[in-house]
Image (cartoon, rainbow over all chains, first blue to last red; front, side):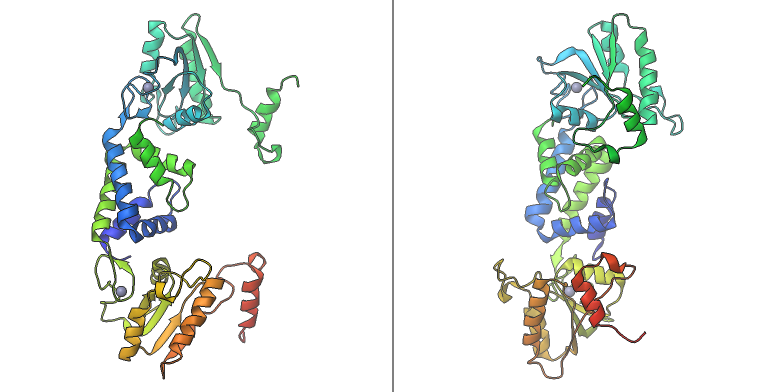
Length: 198
Length: 198
Ligand SMILES: [Zn+2]
Ligand SMILES: [Zn+2]
């Protein structure tokens, strides 16, 4: 549609997660209708974020400082490390404000089929911390998927060797506000299996 | 989440049509994970499109040239003008390849409640063409909404004064591949009213 610059914009927008050709065109049109007040500020924000972005060498979080604002916060409990798959998971837990310790972002899950092995996961910083003996408890907050479970069991094997270390995992069950009849069997089974006195 | 540059990016992404805070964070993370191969090219494409974009002074299309590639195409029938509400509508008709004439983009619809009057619609280029006597037929391809109908009737009044001009409107009915039981009553009534011999 009209000019290679516009086509290129639509093509790149169409690669974004959750986008199809239709939404790419819709967003492109929205931006192009007001190039000065919509397109230019977003392009500028992208450039600035791209220049400012750092991967935290301690936990793997994406932030504008390294170490990230969580790792450098003296009020966070460095003895309590929550292991997550992605930065998105970390951000979700931070928004919920439910974890007062620090994190370790694996950057993925073990997946023999996809050729993802232990060497592809970001665990070295965690192992360094463990060797230093500063970690009291590791919380495994991995997804309830086959890959998440595989990764969790591999991690539990690794962590077994550290004496006195508590290793815990997040509970599986019915999500808050979730109706039982829309949940899959696995979730229902987990929720029932982990039942507690009412 | 981590730095004002990242927050600003998420804020601006969240203003895009079809976006909420969740999809804005998801897209920001997707881009920030690969700043060089994802974020930078998209920012650059936006900048280039913003610099290249022109509004066609003849039809109102958004393109990288003025007049746009449709208006400047000698093979397009200048005597056949299709009136649409938005550039998105024009692009949809072009993708379908169903119109061999040119367009007139109104840039909206009449809406007394929203304070949109005839002076806010881009019709002057159409009236100029009509005065020149080069237009044979005007096709009204407006949305099947109250505002679309209001705009169509106002346009039909304006066009009545041109002798020998054919004014037509797109048919309403059952969309291709659409099941009848999911259509609203108005569409069903229009489809039934415009029935033809089978
Ligand atoms: Zn960190
Ligand atoms: Zn044009």
